[in-house]
Length: 313
Ligand SMILES: [Zn+2]
Image (cartoon, protein in one colour):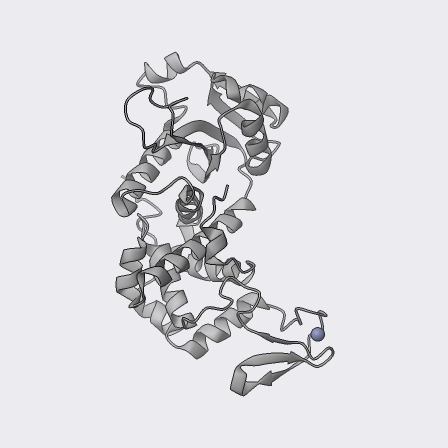
């Protein structure tokens, strides 16, 4: 039986992490390189010569004299926590296959629950931003999913009251192996929402397969080819593997969210989905996932927690 490439790849041990990110100075050097890979750039005028004001850990532009810090204008802006704590959180979140709750983060990092929750939401926001830039290509399985809902009884699934709708899509290569996945919330499962979602997340040259649910009807306007399979032939035929990967991923994500977080409200769901997608989409490089997330964080604008608590799609 061939080895699973993801499970058997060389991991990124805590010892290796400590060697690379074990001090505030090492973290500062890493963040500097991720933020300014070609050398410092003044955020105000774009000039690249600067002085270091060591006492206040600021950079001052020699041209316009604008002062900035390493974390200003990034997702780390105004944090009171050291970078070593942030980067250890990034290590923990990227290496935990099923995700990591804010309570677990709090215990590992020795910080308050609120600080752990803020940190988690900000890092999820970074992961969402990173995945927003990714378009699914090739052969794409697409399905609609319904999450939670406080009301019991009544209709289940499609159209059930109180549930949050989201779309799930997995791209496959010619061998049928999954490559990337995207799951994100939509306001309602109707044809205009589905078409707009497809334009944002699926490459126009992709081939998309869904079931024959009416809201998928306009997909042929946004992708190269849209194939519809009647639901009766999908669910009654055990040999039908057309939606194998998207269904597997939906099951895994639901199980992990229930297991790790117990419940996630509709307004936070997009970021939790983004966290799973980011980890899945970077699963072949668990070591570089840490650097990749730090790089995205360095290039993500500040987002105060009070704004993060509002719904994000
Ligand atoms: Zn300047």
